[in-house]
Amino acid sequence: MSAFIKTGVIGHPIHHSKSPLIHNHWIQQYGLSGSYEAIDIPPQDLKTALPELLKEKGYSGFNLTIPHKEIALDICDDIDDIGQKIGAVNTIKLLDDGRIFGTNTDAYGFMTNLSAHHDGLSYQGKNALILGAGGAAKAILWGLLDAGIGAIYLTNRTREKADMLSKLDPRIHVIDWDQRDQKNEIIDIVVNTTALGMDGQAALNFDVSALPSHALVSDIVYAPLMTGLLQAAHNRDLPIVTGIGMLLHQARPAFQHWYGILPDVTPELEGMVL
Ligand code: ATR
Image (cartoon, rainbow, N blue to C red; front, side):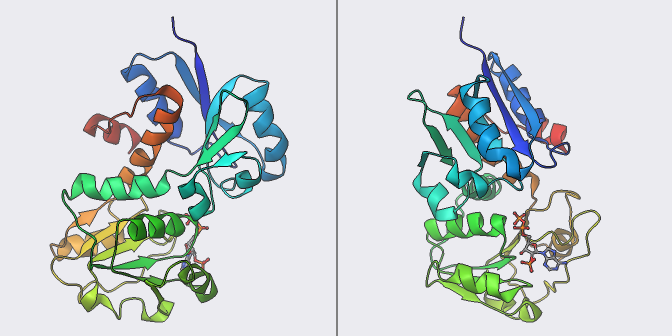
């Protein structure tokens, strides 16, 4: 009989998290022995609570969500290349030698979701527009840069944050938030990483009319699934990618780190989390 593997997600607040639904579904689907819980820990307690949960309470690993992804950098003994590049970790594993390993699966989640919906999508020589310069934007920037994107136009309400991120790579060009749709004629991929368009938030004001007819429009907001941005793109018959897939795909390599299986994203699972 295989050992029981305890895992979970740590955040503050955490009650809204869909991650327990996703991981417990996979534990059942693959007939594994384990559990995945949501644990609320305030940021000031993470440095003591996380090692204690791993080393004394028998947990094998965790996902970390807001506001813990950057704080955890100081807690990990070993952070892989992508975690270091993104400057945040969302997946933790206790190694056999007692060290705490950290990585970031958000870039994988975003990029895999795009290719799951648009097989053979190529990035060489393409121009992307990223709206927002927060934690999610940083992971997506790395995903696109790593895939060989030609140029990224980055725009953010607070321009300084975009200016900071643009130092990461000469392919990143910052444009003013007020000018966010002014480059649209040359844009191949649009990504909204801001909270705008989310239930309870203001709408994203973005004119899709000048985008080329092949431009792919994606949103990381998934509540609602059809955001105003996606609806406007759909009305123009532009290809779209909704935000729920990024959430599902970023969970897959985390699950693999703990349970040794890279699980599938099925329409059934997609239906469960919506
Ligand atoms: P996440 O981890 O989801 O990226 P975040 O790091 O808090 O969350 O980033 C939120 C992003 O949404 C930021 O780019 C933020 O812009 P600022 O840097 O100017 O705060 C953007 N955002 C949130 N509310 C916004 C609003 N009302 N108008 C424009 N941008 C907004």
